[in-house]
Length: 130
Image 1: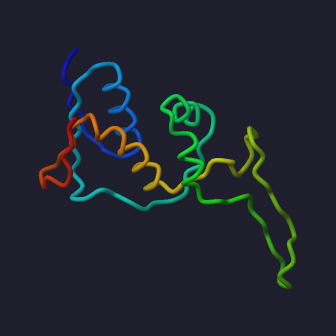
Image 2 (image 1 turned 135 degrees about the horizontal axis):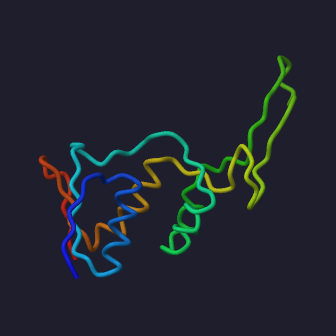
């Protein structure tokens, strides 16, 4: 089809690279970070985000890589639970059924994209092609 170059190899960049390659584009992703950025905060994946993972065939992998959080509990000065919120599948509450660390989600998206796209930086930290 055509060749596409874009910057940013985190969550959105890796997802876009995967989809563009799926639709036949030759994709190169450049990143200014000197190494893959693991770590980061928890990400609640809901709605459209979860649908995208489902269509990519990554929903089960994201659930398996999840933090395991089942909800939030507040305890009083005696260590007793004073209030609690539990994740409910499909509900849009304060906690989500699918929660994953930012770095784990980025890597989950990077791995399949990197098999068919070229990745690189000024430091050459990663470069993969099919």
